Structures are given as C-alpha cells and as structure tokens.
Image 1 (tube, rainbow, N blue to C red):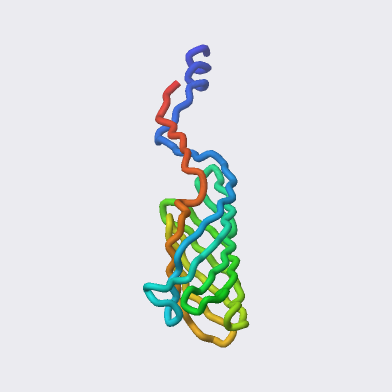
Image 2: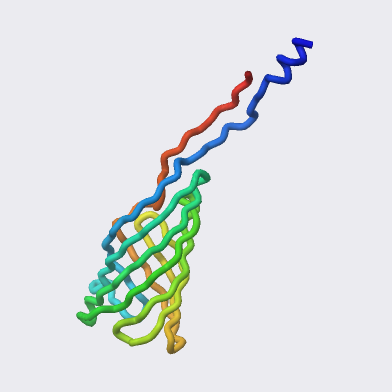
Length: 155
C-alpha cells in the first residue's frame, strides 16, 4: 500500500514549457513614414506616436497605437490614426484601425503589420483612394520578453 501511495504522489513533466511575465507598457515614439504617391524619399512624413500594450503569460500582445504624421513634402499636418494591435514578438503584430486625413479632410481605414522598429500598412480613404505606407520608428518589439523556461522534472 505504501509503494502505491508513493507512486501516486510522483509527478513529472515531459516537455519544457516557457512562460512570460504579464506586462503592461506605454511608450512614445518618433519615426519617418513614406506613403505611396504622397512622399518622396527625401521628404518623408514625420510620425509621432504613443503605443499602449498588454502582454499576457503566453506572450500574446494586445493594445493600441495612436499616431500623428506631419508632411514635410507639403509642410502641413498629414493624418491621425488609431489602430488596434494583436499578435506576438516572434511573428509580429497585426493592426487594424481608423484615422482621419487632416490634409484631405476625409476618414481613413487601414490594416497592416507592426514589427520591431517598423510598421507597414494599406489604407483606403473616404474617397475610395487606396495607398500604402511604410514607417521606420524608435520602438522595438512590443511587450515583455522576460521568460522562464521550466525543464522536465521527475519527482
């Protein structure tokens, strides 16, 4: 009976598991943005933004990105955009959101990808004009990358 009780108390884990610490962060950033048909290589838009993210224990990141762009080409405010973020550091974050073109006076819809120091997106404005943008900015990967790996244990 005591042998059975000691075997029943034995536990083991076969595969190593990695867990991440839960983490919330808010970060401001600045960057350069090029947009099809609107910016030249030498006069990009200047982007200012604020990103708020929450990372859970499985390293899933959700949050929001608010940005304002200023056109060096036209010397005027360009657009304001608010996007929802979802994904993780290893495969990148998807973004989808709405904005407003200050120079065209129309609503914007966009979807794209956010990675470490880069953002790429496609956009449609209220006049049904399509465009694409690429941004290089000062933000690394969103979220907390502190992880703990548990190795197999036999008790």
